[in-house]
Image (cartoon, rainbow, N blue to C red; front, top):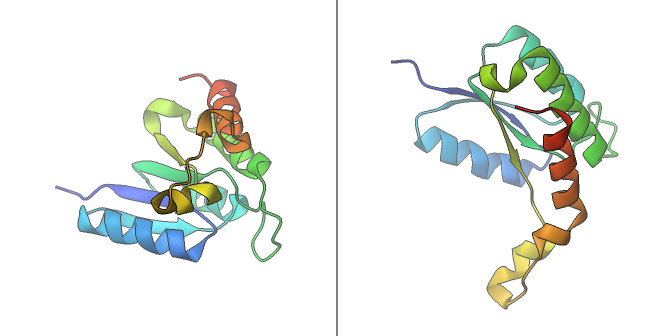
Length: 127
């Protein structure tokens, strides 16, 4: 049986390392990119089983400027080209405040800008 193949789109090296370790422990194959342009190029040439997407990514490599709009645009493109049935997309959000949960800080994701952007992204391309 062939291992599932994931495209991880995340621009934070620390988070990529954690995701890769977890997916590797599950027996998955992993390919990682840090931006919208590289993700679109990888999707054209590789048969991924699913994509794990951080919405806040840069548009191009080595340019900085990560924004939620880039992740939303990538999601729209994937939905138009591949459709949700052919390439499931798992959206993950990292909230800076959540890093402090162990210190008693609680984050209300339902009202955060990232959660609203995620809801807009998911609504933009129905399943």
